[in-house]
Structures are given as structure tokens and as C-alpha cells.
Length: 223
Image (cartoon, rainbow, N blue to C red; front, side, top):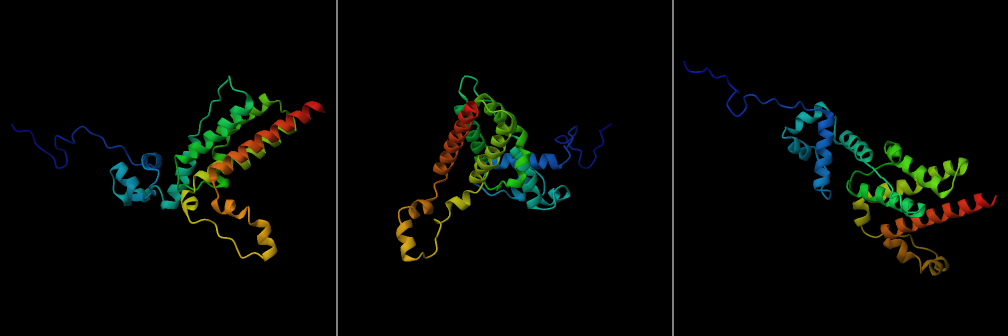
């Protein structure tokens, strides 16, 4: 007797169970798309293609592209990890930590990390940052305020700087017409301001942060 066949139950599909679509799967797929082609703007169609589903099916779990981007930003930040090299001094460890955060953000351009979302990555940055500043010799209020300042100023700079590549690639900044006397005073600095080298600016910020912490440790030890 011939075996009966049912529509949609051919040999290629029999026994296979399709994984249900979920918000978590969508976010994971979006991260994969970005990491594979970081220079390409993320679209719902690209995420749907990654999952092998119709674009409209994504709207059951995310209302629009902006909601997806918010979830992807949070997931990208939460993936940040850093383990300092124990043999390095605190200055090198602090520099490595901040550069690692900047490099992590560079993996996800066009996400435009916002300062308000920074606490998502805070535990991953907070623990090594506090440990490094303790090693430097800071305690109490000095430790807390230094942690807050570096996290907000340099940490956020690392995220924002790397997540706005279109802004960096745009035409140089333009400046208004200055009075003649002001222009003469600014002539030597305006070309550098217009150029806006983000790498140089970040290195300058990291160096200033280390110098400030070093000075604070010296003053604390002298008091």
C-alpha cells in the first residue's frame, strides 16, 4: 500500500521544526548584519533576509526601524568586555580600557549611541575602571568622582565618536565670518578646528585624563 502524502510535508521538510521568530532573534540577526558589513546602513529588509523571513513578519516584534535600532544599540553596548593585563601599570590599563571601548563602538557604526543609553554598558565598564583607579591609589570621593568623570566624558566620547561616521566624513566644519581682529587671533587654530581629526582628539582626551588622575593621586598622597 502506497504511503499517503500530505501537502507541505515533503521529504525535504518532514521532521524539521522551524524556530519561532522572536525579538531576540531579530536583534541577534541585526548585529550579525552590522558586524559583517559595518559600512552598510541597517535596514529591516536586510535583517529579514538574514533570518530568511518576510520583512513584514518583523513588525510583530518591532514596531519600526527606530525601535529595532534602540534594541540593537543596547545589545551592542552590552557585548562590551574588557580584562586588563595584570602586568601593565594603571596608566596603560586605563588607556587600553578606553581604547577597547572605542574599538568596540567602531564595530557598530551608524547606531549613533546616545549618552542616555550609556548606562547599558556601565557595569561592563564600571568594574574594570574602578579596579584600575583603585590600583592608581584613589579612594573614597576621589575614586567615585574620577570614575564618574572618565565614564561620562571619555567613555561617552569613545562611543559617540565612532558611531557617527557619516558626520565625520561630511565636509569640514564651516565657521561664521569673524570680525577682522578676531580672525587674526584665530587664524592659526581654525584650520585644525575645521579638520576635526577624531583620532587625535581622542588620544588628547585620554592623555589629559591620565595626567589628571596622576595629579590627583599625587595630591592625595601629599595631603
